[in-house]
Amino acid sequence: VIRLWRAPLALLHRLEPEQAHRLTLKALALGVHPMRRPVDDPALRCRLLGRDLTNPLGLAAGFDKDAEVPDAMLAYGFGFVEVGSVTPLPQAGNPRPRVFRLTEDQAVINRLGFNSRGHAAAAARLTARAARPGMVGVNLGANAASPDRVADYVAGLRALGPLAAYVAINISSPNTPGLRALQGKDELDGLLRRLMAARGEAGLRQPIVLKVSPDLQPDEVEAIATLALAHGVAGLIVGNTTLGCRDGLNSRWRGESGGLSGLPLFAPSTALLGEFYRRTRGRLTLIGCGGVASGADAYAKIRAGASAVQLYTALIYHGPSLVGAIKRELAQLLKADGFASVADAVGANWRS
Ligand SMILES: Cc1cc2nc3c(=O)[nH]c(=O)nc-3n(C[C@H](O)[C@H](O)[C@H](O)COP(=O)(O)O)c2cc1C
Image 1 (cartoon, rainbow, N blue to C red):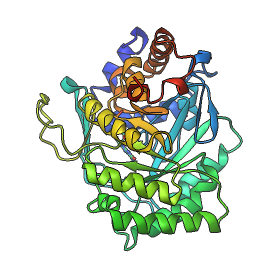
Image 2 (image 1 turned 90 degrees about the vertical axis):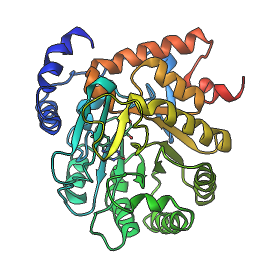
Image 3 (image 1 turned 180 degrees about the vertical axis):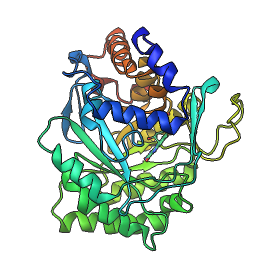
Image 4 (image 1 turned 120 degrees about the vertical axis):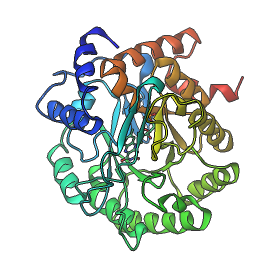
């Protein structure tokens, strides 16, 4: 933790996690952020899903579910920000408490269950910032009570796609019963068929990426990669929170149900990312997400095959100065290994 953030973080950590989060969003919305984006090392320049970025570090979905503060987070130095998950209708999510800080494990367990203010609210906010610079992707979810979840994603694509740099289809939240079944071969085929048809009808050019679970089996990896390529999906975010990784946790909250994020997720999510890269070799853009807390972590995901990385949980423990620290270390690591750019290092593990 860089000194300046020690006191505010200690205070926030005395609050119930969701209260701390709400307070953080309020402060950000009120202008507690740098006035100007920091200047990035040229070695960090990269291209992601058709856009030029000054760095490959993104904010993962879930921090800014309702698109309240994307520009504040860009000002802290993220190369791109993903808002959401947004559901069509507003919904409250699961009963509280539903977010737990596992401080000893540098992890979080959440079972929020898509608390969302809905498409219309997010569309209004994204419309209000549409002229601003910065890459903002939109992550789509489905309402818990929806009779047709695929229709929810299609509605999200139509409502929010035009306002997004890319659209992420979240079919991997463990907190909406049955949602992850959409990763199965037949269901995914049907989902992608309808999504791509809607994208064509609406004349949308925004790339679509799938956000997958870190708990996939090898046959599922193969099926998802094959279907994504067949349907013209641009990329994958690997991945969401895990239902596994409970062994070895020390925190008193380790038995809570929900998705686990943070440090324990780093190794398995990076291994899965590598699996996807090995099978697709650059034909799908991969975004590595899970347990990134340092420049070395980001670099490891890039070497495993990620064109960009995202984080959320480490921000809770280290505060926003982590963004600059990760970027500085990543630039050093790239140069130390003789890479002139991020792109040169993508998938390097599989070449040597
Ligand atoms: C409190 C919390 C809420 C989250 N909400 C969402 C969400 O709405 N949609 C989504 O796709 N992922 C969500 N995630 C998952 C993160 O985007 C990310 O995939 C996961 O936490 C792994 O990254 P990390 O270890 O850097 O946190 C959430 C994670 C946390 C901790």
